[in-house]
Length: 343
Image 1 (tube, one colour):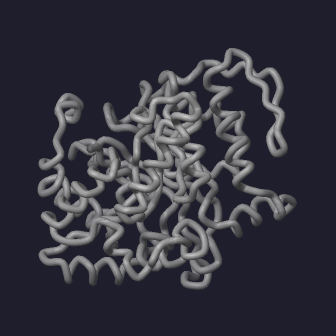
Image 2 (image 1 turned 60 degrees about the vertical axis):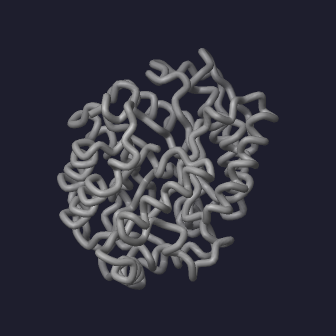
């Protein structure tokens, strides 16, 4: 089992208080994650705040572009994987995105994991691209992933789709990793299909063990139909982490957090099919033994990577304290030879 930390790139006002972290503090969190033995760090992607954040806070949140943040981190870390959860494909142009990611992979020595997805807030997409209000973002993600795969792997790449079109692009240098890992974010069947057909990982969020089992079965079916080996696809749910001296304390901290409000805001998008009254059951909320038990159940369901774990915190220092507590009390139960080599 691998473990990754969600970093505060675009989370102020969403899953963390506003203000939360300055650039130097974001870098320190990434360095701390590497020091503690986490496998990966994950930066999320937003441009402008959704309506509910603007209504709650008078100031605008600091949203740090994730690829530039990870580029800065690549020069002060050695081993930790640098990941996105997720780059919102409908808000991006695929050729320039491919160039940015390939460059980051080169400068980091092949440590990039590119998580991609539709995006949680359609209103953000429409604010950035008002002329595309009627666009099908799912179609854009399908075309975007196909475009990236071609650009990363073909000597000269062309694509002509409904939403994206480019001709005879020679992307050089190629990513250091072949293939560069593309993880597909989302809980619905289309996200699972995209991961099975094209991806190296599936990034769901806050799913029950039963839903993950069903998703893994579908993922394996899509992969086999595409002539791919399902065992080579990482199952990497994004989860929230709140630890306490007892279960009640952990649940109380979780439900008082900005993250809890954020998850409730996703009831019409990312988490529309989930029972939001059970959010603490769908995440890592409880005492360390309870969390270890929950992770073991996730592993039995097919999970291989607890990705973008969001440690519920009010300040960067508290976040790093929670990361350290997790590293001391939970990580040793899942230590692997690979992690020992990296450390």
